[in-house]
Image (cartoon, rainbow, N blue to C red; front, side, top):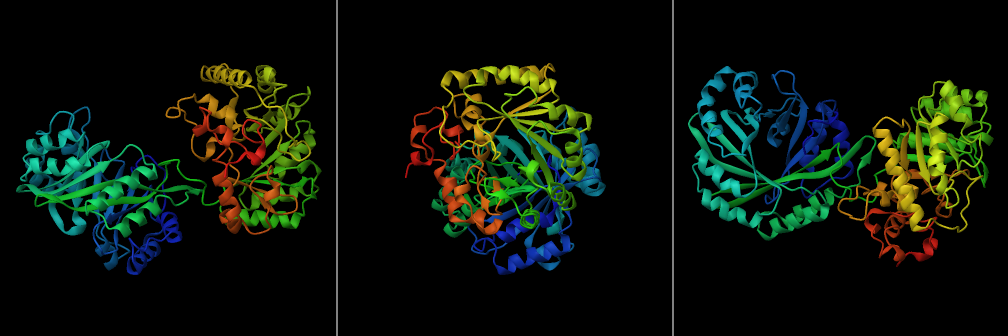
Length: 604
């Protein structure tokens, strides 16, 4: 859970996710009360992550907290990790005692920067002078390939002349050699024997404490793993339970935590970063899990976001024109649910489009308007002035003037001019020609899709699908255009819509381990990251799935059984089972897999 490269958020943003998903098996009522007090006193403090140290085989239910904050006092150090012990937080949530860790790895001049710049500023001259002889003895005894990763001062625990070293050993086989070489005063062979039961993970780090007298016997071993998939973490937790190093109730709570739906705005995902085993008296006597919230994607194994990322809103459709008051109420709800962006369909025939866009601007909702491509300059200027930030031309390129609006938008200094290009078996061979036309017209971003979304153009009847040769030809063309863009010959960005999952999957190749098309964005995002507001004000997973509409609020709709079932059934198409792209594709349930028999083909 390395948050050193992430942007910061207030502590309160992280704790909000915890309070929505409490873990009574790990944090009892008193502990949650302490964290709420911390939220009141330190909620505005900026951090890139918030972690919790969980003692897995201790029946007591409390956690220590870990922050990653900017560091300006120490030369050559940008961030520091702050550990807030529970007892200290309980005593004074506003200004608890803190333990600090900073990066301390070797640079091009070895550890010279550490001794001459970092330590004096970080630990003080006196402490640096007292601990330097022992620290140098350890560092210059490390085996080849083993290095100091972080260094910590345990001031918050009153251990002024004790410093913790986080030593990166990498492979398991180097752990014993490292302990022997640095002169650790315990049984290195005994450690390796105990650690044999935990072999096969990505890397191992030692937690060694030093004092003015030398290396202390206390030893922790951090275990890291390459994949953060919850199923893998389940196996490690089950192993710890079987070894008597984790209470079953705490294992279940951690399993539940790593499956919490991530927040989308801002992105926050619950995760488990690593485990630590504490060695004493010939065996591992304690295990700890470091769980928390992070700003980067830890894994893709989640069915949906906690709330939608985006809303498609139908101002005019088969059901007629939307009632403006109802649309405004839905927009307020979007704002309350932290849905950051909306896209309007059917705005060309709705009389109050500009009023609605003005409302979006006031509520700080990012608004995009779908165009036919043939709008007048005055109409486009009015939409821009009303609050439209983005424009999307929806067309199959069959008419010469389909891209006309792009040139006008360019003259109006609209920087983002997108195109939803509908590809069919009939126009697939013209794809590269359409690409040239789009760029010449001033399109900055082209999105390839297999159908129209707008109600006045939508055709939901079964139609001929692309054959394999056409899909392969499109994939090759996309690769060529991407190469041209990388070399500067093409300026327009090119994307494949999640609605066009079979093509998106094909771009990544047949090897599912190398194919980057994964997660909920690998295909249909209806009910996973997007929802739709229909012209009658009801909600639907998307504008293509109107038969699943509901009049409830966004929260209840998003958490309802119909949406949950849709997320599950989209993963189970019979005819996809023999396809090499099955694991990296998520077909549209309205259109069917590769133009199949729609939802009648779903397995039970």
